[in-house]
Image 1 (cartoon, rainbow, N blue to C red):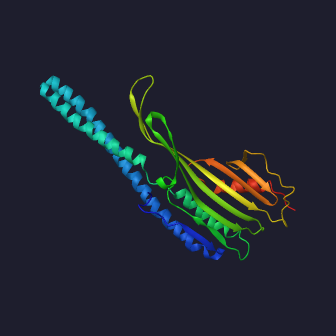
Image 2 (cartoon, one colour; image 1 turned 90 degrees about the horizontal axis):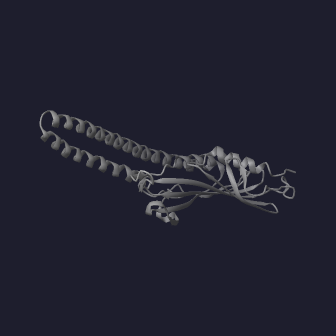
Image 3 (cartoon, rainbow, N blue to C red; image 1 turned 30 degrees about the vertical axis):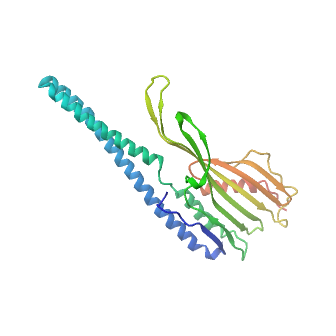
Length: 287
């Protein structure tokens, strides 16, 4: 978990002037999450330095014991072997601690909080007069047993897990009269760390955990017939690029446009979302 507890979903049903408390709440979650992520990074850095220190001691002790064993007495050599055994045990112990942190790191919610803050801060200026923003924000981590979508066998007798969480669902009436419903989901593919034997060297190596994040944006746009010509509007055949995102499917029925776009990246930034919306609006014909 990110902060050791579940974050209550943020339910929104306010007019533009009453969104600031939600923005402040998101900022508080972002600050708390940043502290947890930074503490985890600091601990991993500390353990890595400690591991390198013990490896250096192993090399130094080995050379020293070998020279003393030859020059003075063979007993120094055997004492060194015992000491190196202890140091190697410490290195292995620290390595397991680092692997455990890599397997279950705290989720970095900075990108999600930044996008949610941007949406609430900027969409309120684009809302139609006296209309409300309605929706739900869920800032809990995607990589949670409750969000497990499916599993599949992976390399090295591992099980690859797929998680999916819809973390944003907003519905607004824009100043141009269009009604927009925006949903954003995060999909994570996790391949756990495992030992793998090299095909050429035959040596066993540790393959670290691998995570692949994919962002899915589902959009429904109800066009204002007084300002936009739905008959003349034609969307490209899928798949097509909408900014950095690829539109997988899109349909148009009368004044209603529905589409789903995906992006494989660590974070979905506000700039990426703006570019996608701009690309969609370029295909809509004004009257």
